[in-house]
Image (cartoon, rainbow, N blue to C red; front, side, top):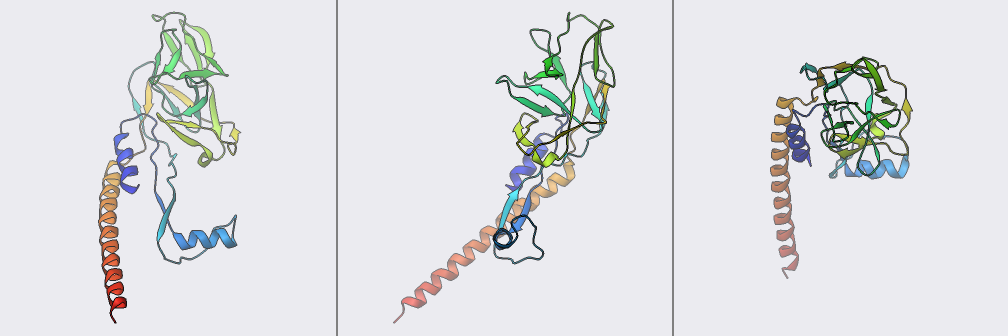
Length: 233
């Protein structure tokens, strides 16, 4: 999982708005002790007897802003998520502001998900219209307002469920809040992936795998010798 996570981060280094994932390790015995004695608290100290991966939390820190000059590239400066609608009618949340016009002249992501304004798609009257998007999200087509992009705040981003395609779904634990983010037309937010850090993590993961493989082999050999000695009469 360590190398897979690093590889996925590297694969999305050029994906606008992508947020890197981390791998957390915890000794297995510590997990069990915490569950037995502290259901809602994190215990202090370690009892090393194997490790588990309790999760791969997402790092939601903002990426750098890059100017593109594309009128349908819109970056969020500050907090907030775009609200989008999938083909199945589900509501998702993303920071990827590289938009396009679909066959119905509706603003959408390049994966085909509709960008929402107060729960409704934003339709541009003509593909030749001059599109202007204000910092507060108001969308103009040939100087006429056609909708206002809705930014959604999440109180605890750890409650979001990664859904692929640089998108998240809300869970029953997700609480929505107001946001202070503003939009910047003609910009994208780069991923917050640090290439050097991920390359190092990838190497660490490979070395960790080799070390564990060697350790397991040694344990197997030791156990086999012990069994042989136990059979001697």
